[in-house]
Image (cartoon, rainbow over all chains, first blue to last red; front, side, top):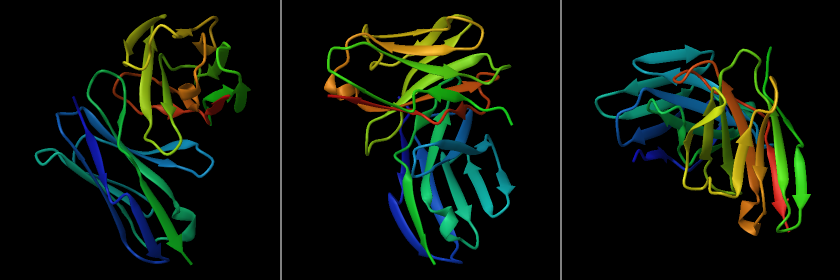
Length: 108
Length: 113
């Protein structure tokens, strides 16, 4: 059974800070996903990773397959980045296995 | 940009009543999913659906739940006799393939009284 763990659970940052959210998983995966959940509940996919690193704007996602670990970084954080960030693993059986999420609040 | 839509956005029902949650996946997607999120908890997988049949279901998806693709566009989740513990946000998602990105609908918030 694959378990997906995230840390920290809650994170408060000042505007402009560099933010890192960590995710670890327990078994082999076909892909690791980072998603953003807005206060109203909607879920948006940010990245899908199977190796290496991806960048989109101020967001960077990395994965280390050997260590079963992924990180999401936000550079120059802004209050509009405040949301819940979730990692999810998929392992070839279609479904996503979700982590518990990291609630990020960026203060102006 | 194509998106997954869900109706209704909110539903309140009495315990024991049947509810049907509706989803319209992205039109060229072939794989469909339902997930739920109880307030304050993580998102949980319920069921995946491909080629008009269930591909996988979780332990949560018991005999009270069923899914259907009644026509070429809709994908529904039915709960036959709702319980208090069914209160949650229900998300529909769709994807082109098995490993690709899933696109989520905005959710239906179900409250069972």
